[in-house]
Each structure stands twice: as C-alpha cells, then as structure tokens.
Length: 548
Image (tube, rainbow, N blue to C red; front, side, top):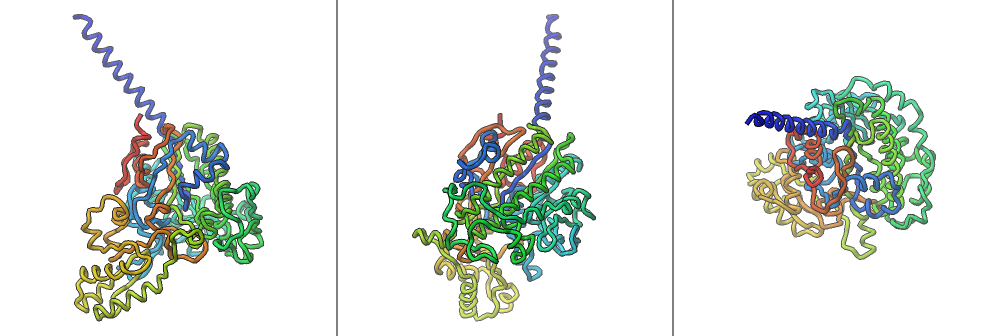
C-alpha cells in the first residue's frame, strides 16, 4: 500500500519526461528556414526525362533523401504563373484567393488589370513603373504570412524571382521584402514601397557588383550537345529564337544579341537567368541572416527562366534540356550553401511548379497527334455576329479573355435580355464550333456540385466576383499562340501534372503515386511548423509524409 503513491509519482514523472522529450523532438525538427521553390513551367517529366544527366547533388539529392509526390496536380483552371504562385502558397485556388490570371478583365472598372500592379505604391530601386507592384489583389494570406503572424512578426520572409508576380504573391502581404529583376537598360533588382522605402545596402551592392553584366556571355550547352539525346534536334522549325540570329541553334552570343532583345531582359530568357536568381537569393539569405535564430524564416524562391525558355523554344528543345541541367547544378549549389550557412538538418525545402507546358502543336501535328491553333479574333467575330442576329442587340459582349466571355450587363438590361437565357444560347452555339471541347456557364458553375475532373477544376478556378459568364475549354493540345514555342493555361494533363518534392527537417524519405494537389503544399508546411493554415486554405496536409 505504501508503494502506491511512490509508483504514481514515478509514473507521472515518466509521462512528463516523455512529453518533454516529444516536445524537444518537435522543437528540434521545426526548421529554422523554409525555402519554397517554384520552377516556372516545369512539367513533371523533366525529372524523369533528364534523370540520367542530372548530378547527384541537385534534383537527385532532393528526391533520394526527401519525399517525392509523383502524381501531383493543379486542381483548377487556368494554369498561369500568377494563379500558380498564389495557389502554392495560399493553399487554395483562384475561387478564393482571387488571382484568376496573370491579367484579367475587371468588370467593375471596365478594363484589364495585372495581378500585382498597384499604382498606389512607388518603385524602389528604379524610376520606371516596374516597381509599382504589390499583392493587394490577392485576397487571402499565404503560409509565409501565417508564419509571420505566429512568430509575432519575428520570423522573416524574403521573396526572390525574376518576375514580380513570382516574388510578390508567394511572399504575401506581410513580407519583409520581395525583390524582382528589372532588365532593359538597367539590369537591377528592385522592389516596391509596399515593402520598404529604399533598397538595403546589400541589394545596392549586388546591383553595383557587375554580377548581372557578367552573364552577358555566350550561352553554350553545359555538356556535349550530341549527348543531349533526351530532346529534339537543335535545328528545327518549331522554335522562335532571338532577334539578330537567322536560326535558333547553339551557341548564343548574349552580349551581341542583347541590344536587339531588350538589353538585360535577355537574361530572363536564357538558362543564366537561374544563375542570376540564385546569386541574388543566396546574397539575401546571408545579408538578412535567414535561419540564424530560433524563429522560422521563409525564403520564397521562383526560377522564372525555364518559362521564358519553353515559350521561346518549346518543351522538347535542346535549350530547355540545357536549362534544366544547369538548374540541377543551381539546386546543388543552393543545398551546399544552406548546409554551410543554416546547417544541414536545420532547413526544409519544397520544390514544385506553377504550371506545366504543352508540346508545340505544330510538332505534334508532324507526328500525326491531334493538336492545333485557335484563332481568338475569328472566334470573337463569330460570337458577336451570332448574338447580334439572335437577340437584335448591340455590343452584348464586353470582353473575351482567358477563355472566358464577359457579357455586357448594361446592354442586356437595355434590351430586356434574360441573363440565364443568353448564357445558355451562347454556350450551345460555342459548343458546335470546331476546336471547342467543353463549355460551361456561370449558372452551371455556381449551382453545380462538381467534385472531380475538369469540371471541378473549372469551379475551383472560378471566382464569383471576378470571373466571366461563359467559360470554354479548347481541345487537347489546341492553343492560342504562335506556331513556334510552347505555352500553358489549360486543365489538360500536360499543364496540371507538376513536380512536388519535400526535403530536409521534418521530412521522411519516400515517394508515392497517390494523388496530391498543389493546394496541399501550404497546409502541409503549416502543419510541419505548427502554425495556422492560410485563412482560406482548402488543401489538406500530406499525412503520408508527415505522420510517423
């Protein structure tokens, strides 16, 4: 009987000790730095196609020592850069965060708007309007915002990308700074008064260092071009190339080509743009001392150049292969630098994309694969003629963009035309046209309980306040684009299937072919950090990786 109280005390002490050990383990696993990497226009198969050419320390290190989600998809339409970056970091789609495109028609002011443009702020680091940007059109918080709130603003957030939207949207509303590259005749990293009044000394030093100019050099292949067997012929008719060259073939003398190709902007469109982005990002990590205290910091890092390269040369080009082989070395360098500066095991990385990309349709046609090019001007002309004859009203369409039709509500009211009726009639007419796969109306999307397939993707990308009245889907591999180069934006598999790799603190090794979605990333990182999910998050934590 006398041993009972002593046993109880020892038992409670044991439980407390175990709890303390668990809490200690949790604290140890919580990373000092989270690096969220988005590769602009990265198809999943770039991992597998170029695998044998990658080094051991870049993509292979991430996959072999991290967790690879092989069946990861965007779950909304349209798949553009702005919505992609916003969705990765907010954990939800355009229906909630409001970034429904890179540009879209604002029906309330009657003009097109750009996703990050903000005339209320000033450029910092340039006299051009290139810095008049902010995240004000993104309606929700990001995971980086939630980390700032959780740490009482002690955890830092720095955003870096060549594109303003690739830097601003991931970094969120509370970032310490977001930086992007302004080329033309300046070649400087800049920001906005939304974040700061002037550039820090380290940014000025970087801009004055000559690093940017050093990349205006010949772009040759990293390895023997004859060994690039995973891509098409260097000389072909499916690529655009650069002004000043008769054909799109290696090598490219960038210093010679720059004057005819928007000066320093040329660097965005070649593989060296990734090198420049990493140079600046590492300078930010060290100058801002990211990952050096007890509060988790965020670096949101977007590599924009692969998108420019694919738009120009296509997804099957020697240029895109060289870009990814060089990006692999960039990742190896990033990991090595973080090991040394933050400490191996003290940081967590995730790598994904903002969308995929389609094979050049003219190339697919040469292989007898169904594909094509859609003429938006002829399409709009046919719609206006049809509606004018059917309803005897003028100017019933205000805008057609992003595969959405915006009706003129004022004209409908003036002509006593029922909104639901004109939607239905217009959708039926469009569906009969060549190259049209599917058509949905605002009424269908608002009322429909779509749970899977492209219909669900359309609903997830449909913002009731900002989107149009009729949405049309083109046939697979049918695009609105020139005859050369690749693009994206659809809900077809080539645009939705994107890589997702987690690596580092709190991440176990493994892989899965279970479906994951791009909106799962932010809640997964939130769960790892023990913070609130972004305030409109609809994704789920990826427990197959997190649960021990």
